[in-house]
Amino acid sequence: MGPCGIIAAEKAAGKFTKVGSPNHIILFSDDGTPQEHGWIRAGEEDGTISQPANLYAGFAVFYAKQATTGAKYHAGMSTNHGSKIINLLGNLEDAIVAPVVSKSNVNDPGLWGNYKKK
Image 1 (cartoon, rainbow, N blue to C red):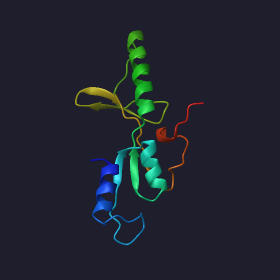
Image 2 (cartoon, rainbow, N blue to C red):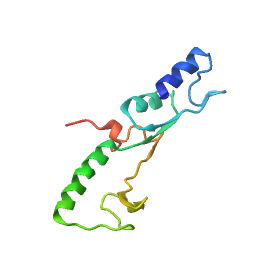
Image 3 (cartoon, rainbow, N blue to C red):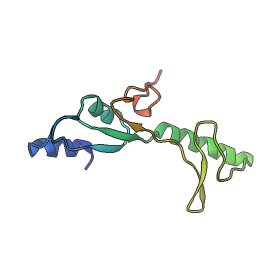
């Protein structure tokens, strides 16, 4: 059940209160979707982890192209986009930063959930 289902269940049970209210049940999700940003702005959700889907997809293509040129990477390397290459269960991974989103940064245009195609 995602935040939408939890919010609905809290409302149906008469337990829902806005962020900062007495008896508020903390609600934190994991994706950073535009809908979750809306709940944070409305005071219905405390926060989320922004899983930058646009970066995951873009860098998957980047590394696939790099593989065709013979580029080599190793654990511990820093990237030019603020992450590090790590070893995860014997495989290299670009540990792209997944920031916490809260009321203080929910309007950051750099978050994938706020991305607007120009």
